[in-house]
Length: 301
Image (cartoon, rainbow, N blue to C red; front, side):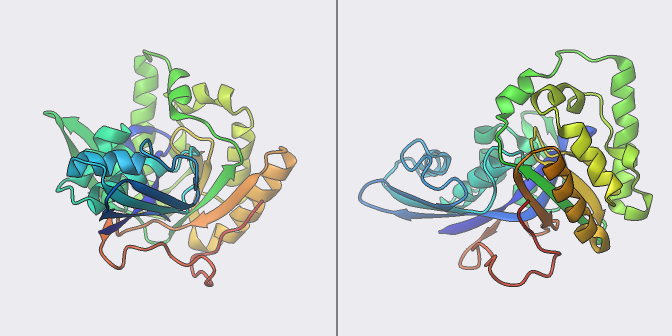
């Protein structure tokens, strides 16, 4: 069976470990019975883990109970950049192997239920743990929104980024984030209400800046270039500019200029929210990126 799951941006500023948005970059996983394990990969991350330790193999083998499988992974989601590549792989592999609950499998194996929920449900989601399971809510999302992703040519492992966070925060900082979260949800449902303060945060972004010192200047450049708000994508190092569709090209230009000015090599990609989430069957293939795009396009920095 074949399955496809989208990339995702989690946290979105004040929504640490709660919010995530599915984006239109994808992982495709195909799982078939075989006499012995055969692993192949294409695109992003190709050849890095082509063996029994590949996440897709571990997930698929866990679902079917053995590894006599042919597992093929195709991806256009950058690896270890804060765009939910591992959650997308886990969700797609679980579905391709026939798991009845791909979300549960992906959340458990990947360890990021927010990314897993976006990869399975699509759109904007909020996730919370309750009674040993995950409750996912799909939230309103303005169809006019686009996301400009500034993707540096460097990795930032989530475990390292997590270590930078404090064990405790003040009541003032927690209240600050709750207020900003309310602003953000209002703005994501209607872009006319989205303001730059909506993605301000005191729980994770300031602490992770030590791992990516260029982040504040890049975020400012995204807003100065026309984004309504800007934030880290997950644990980074990808930065996001949230904007109207009509301003995406201007924001992308500003992002490229900011990366060049900061001497940060990488890509700038215009993305649209993915509203389908996990797809299985013959149609679960990667889009042909060679074809002209109607979403504002991507490009290198």
